[in-house]
Image 1 (cartoon, one colour):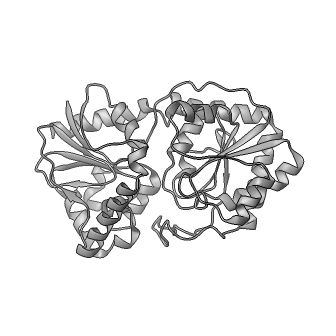
Image 2: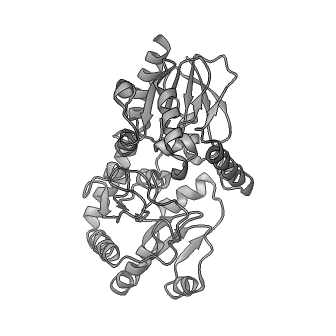
Image 3: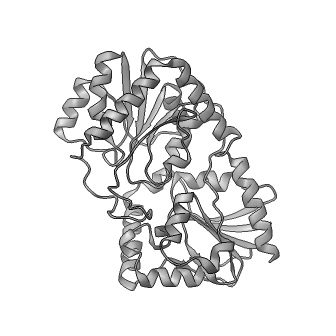
Length: 369
């Protein structure tokens, strides 16, 4: 079974194309390396694509030259081919370049028309939240039978634990550590540091404000910059104990999956679909997130580039402090949750095997119809 798959330059696409369902040969268009994803050239191209979408009021649509049996599009891109195709997306905004300001009536009408066509065989939200966001965008009665939630996954590999002197918290936010809740963790960390011998490592390329640089120096926070190799990322996870993700605006996080694969319990917000990946007191803990970005219909109220560099939330910080203290004090619980997190990636509900079972059936049925 030959499947044509256009991909974007994001690390998650390596997982998609490198681990296809059994009997599937992917014909890949595009690149998925991290250097391309974070390059200024690519960021400018993404801005141009959003601008074109906004000006012309169209969803992202392409014609692909391919002799494959099926087209599998990611992030909601809609092919114009008269060939069977399936699509997955992290949010309906993927159909318009992930910019909620372009998800207008005209774009929604065109998307609904195109995914209602007979050539579109399956529509795969990556989460229940993404499913509800589509349902709340327009009437899905005609396409309901095509809809099926298929979660993203990463392949399992054993991550070697590296001996380190202090219990270490890890956060990752390459270009947007503020948007991923830096100030929330920053408010909780001094109280924890005063009671426990702990470290905090942040992997980021963020330019910090002067007062935050002083904070980082005062509390000897370990800042790691640049693009790390897979081996170096594995070592980073291997010498950490708890992964902290206080993002309020993301739809998904590959770093969260990687942390779980390494056997780290995750302390996360319940924003968007994070609550579908973290089962409290099983593989991690959750902190309630205010509705800064998402409304009750899982649709945007603000864009990612909102300035969170000055954002503080005492209630969130206090709740985070309590959840982190629980894990710091209870080693047995911490290790148990980490083991369960690893199992979820290895052979559980977030495993590649579980994802590929669904994809294989979906691909075969799409070709037969």
